[in-house]
Length: 338
Image (tube, rainbow, N blue to C red; front, side, top):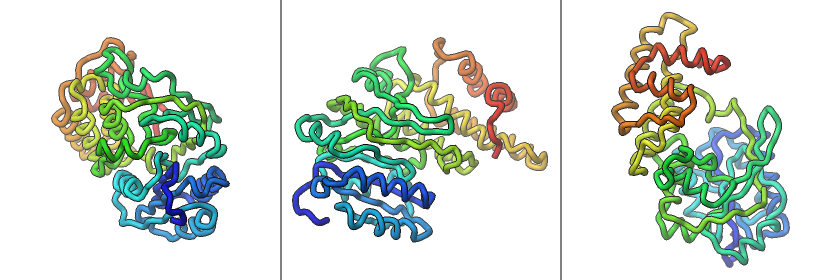
């Protein structure tokens, strides 16, 4: 780091084998975002054991001379471990997390005054969501919705999970995270963001809305996050167990349980292109059902669920694996097989 004074903002970015064009776009957007504020910002780049050297080259070409920056190479350990490493290296008053295939928009000047003169443990921000259908600005709504959706047991009858259960498009006060000893679950290989945000909400921090859209989330359905693989089933089971440990009334996360249960079953049960492995897949599917039912508390039927969710609830709870396949055929006809 070039400056001895602590910066106002730390930008933590982690990367593992990110597409080269997307990584360049991400780095260039960060360099543009902090342009003119080198002494007040820092960029922490955590290379989570990428198997090529492109990230280091892109870092040196784009970020190293334009920003107050640090590059950290570590052995691959997953997003949770990499983000915790980024937190330990950060020294700014506030922190934002950036996914390496997303981008920042605008300028740091748009939020600088707010971060300088206002105090909050967490600022929630709108963001631009970009996918194949185009783009749209997603706004965080009101303050109370944070508790209603992240901690549904506080407000029975509300939504099951907060759609902003991600760490991007947010500004965190570093002192709050350190004092509350909040870190990412390093054992979770999927949905670490949700567990992290639930841990934050349970500490009852000061939430504020910052009506500045500085984050562009680029949805890539071909990314590893959206690929279905039987290897991810154990990750899903781990996540569900951790989700319910964090909540005293686990049935309030019923829709989340259904969604992840279906995802786990899809990964095991629907590679029927060849009948050679049919019986093996059926056995694996039933074992997955047992893991889900054994590893999570009792989920209660919710009459407010949609018709599709009610059907799925009965199918999963009763262990009717063949009907899960029928469910996907009826309600997810465009679902890609493994």
